[in-house]
Length: 428
Image (cartoon, rainbow, N blue to C red; front, top):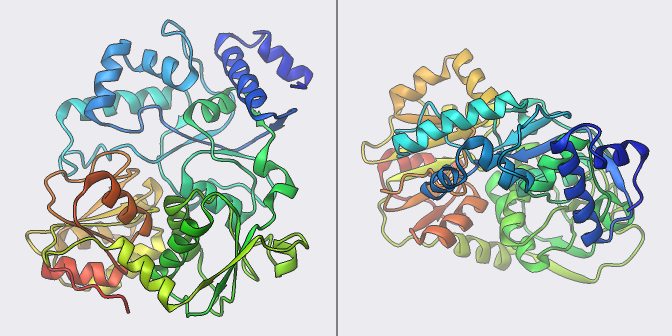
């Protein structure tokens, strides 16, 4: 690869062993991808090396000899004996951890909780911003249009690329951590304008007006295009950021969509010609009543009417969604047999407390959990017999990874079900 003088100095070890290892890792990574150069990045979004606070992670940390040693090996592919310096470039931690204030509700063991405390202290000690969220843009940590970044987490990558128009591929823990010590990432894939053109046209012929609708749409086009770049046309109702957030998350779970365009909505698709960069689609698909129903049926695997676990907030809820949740719930209480979790970023949890919403939630039996991802972090209630969610992404993962019965519906349907203890959702 062609390196700048600064990058060469890092590779030669002038800034120390860890930046040298990070640069060497990125060079090897870039060469494997056929990249010719690095691109500077200012925003790095890297999951903690301790992202899954499970018994397996705990056992691996012990085997490595401790938190620092685990980080050296799994985030840097380095030597366990290294001293880990502070990160040179701003990096924020993505979700998957437990909420340390809610570890008992999340059925985590005390040993995992104590490891979480140590991991959190370590992350803060190396200046890795320990405010985990799969939606860091909700916390004000966001790039601008056309900015090159390095990001992990499928829904975050989709939002940054599609809704904001920033440029990133889906990075891993090693490459994103290396970027935090070098300030660069190999330039390939979606960092190039010509690789961001649409490949498939999705013609929408039914109303898409709610978060649930956008989740169903994203789940469908992710399935049909897999890792390609869909262009959605025919939207008559202008979506909110939360709708697009759910759409991209769904598409990343049913396929591998890192970038999608919505004609007249997203920044690189002012019209169809712009989205396809004046080319023609490889294929065309319709999203009509039949396709919408197919998505719904794929996401619902429950047969018993009873539910005991409701999880809302994948991707994490914005403060606007929390507001809507409370308006819908009103003064009602959650059924005594149901555990309802509201997943949010740490800053949104602070706003919830500031507004006094936390008191209303406690009285209603709602648990607000910050920074966590229930399925990938492995911190959902294992004792649950069935799970309901308003997230197409979470429904897909729960179905595939736990085998538990899963119900998917709107936030309103999930609330009504949590109050009654029975699933009352429907397609319409």
